[in-house]
Length: 536
Image (cartoon, rainbow, N blue to C red; front, top):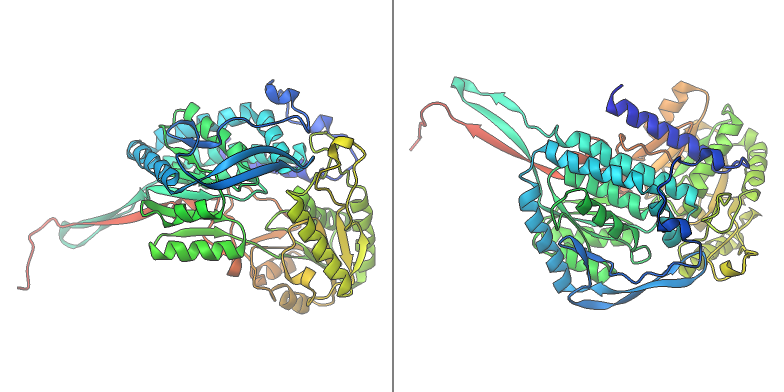
């Protein structure tokens, strides 16, 4: 059985686990076996406090040599400040980049097989420490530990996948006239910068560094200041796995630190995941240095449900499309278009399921939804819901604060997941990305109509369709203006498949073989085997 087949089987297993996320079934039998016994076993919500440096440079944790202000990070479940850290200044950013440059000289000279062995060892360590990493991800991000375990699983699968591709980087030989020939070399870029988002801190870092390191690059990574903790653990893992010091460096900070990274002359490429406005600024800064960028930005994706769909699957798909990670997912299918003759039945089933979602302490095994990332995001989501109601939408369930019974959770950023009915295409809640657990249901009549409405957006990250008609399914996804499309499923992103958007949702791709092209450059060599004839 091939490695690719094994990886695909693992991703299908992951998808099956996720599809059970909102069922009432106990999850004990679904959990990953034989977890490593670590300090995370003793961690419970409300007990963690970080005291270690969060920058990583030259193979160890360090305090930045200079700073531009300070950030503080909250535990979303309790509202507690769990760490404060200085934002890396221009000198610290330069130190990290010089460390990466030194590592690049070593790393880029290794064979693809040698690089692959380090990535495989890193994947093994992540797999071994999956419970520790998932626990820390949950504490810092707020998502349920069940979801966090899946994120960590996808992370080590990503490194395994690119470990397999590292040794396949090759050029092309072209025979020319008279015995002369040409060939191409696929070469690394140099120091790559990764700027991550707070919804999938560890997984996004692996999505970026996996192909980057496989190609022979070194990386400087800046996580979101909301979730600074787990990426440093990834840096330590690469060092333990045998990567040279400086191969994967971490700088902490906000927008100013990000600007220092993007404007640095020794940076060869920038990969960013985040909002459209920030992506636009990064693109502008990169353009001044003619640096290539990969941008994975926001979305307001359509999920189209035809009346011939398997209703249970369609409802489950809509749940997966809207409520993972408390709805804080860029590719969520938040515009749920439902054919009119099943609208009532579909809506009734969705509302019933949403009301059953178990909210609470995300480190408990039966929790299905944790808190949002912070108070500001919570208030932003409430603002969207208030505006939707004022514009005529009907709140079918949720949309209000959730008050936990556990006293230690009283300061957490919890809300009841929301379903909006009576929605129209011109409502703000339908047009703009909310980034919270809010589903908007919209009726439609015909295929032609719904496709026009689905594509009437500046975004183009994802889209989905549920139907038993296989011809219509392929016809619809061919017409959708979106980079990641799903048929009879949603929010399943195997590492083997490229991920990225159309229009203002960005460009470039992460995952899949094609990502190698975005972290490498092609050199053409022309070899003359005869005499040179000059026209002069």
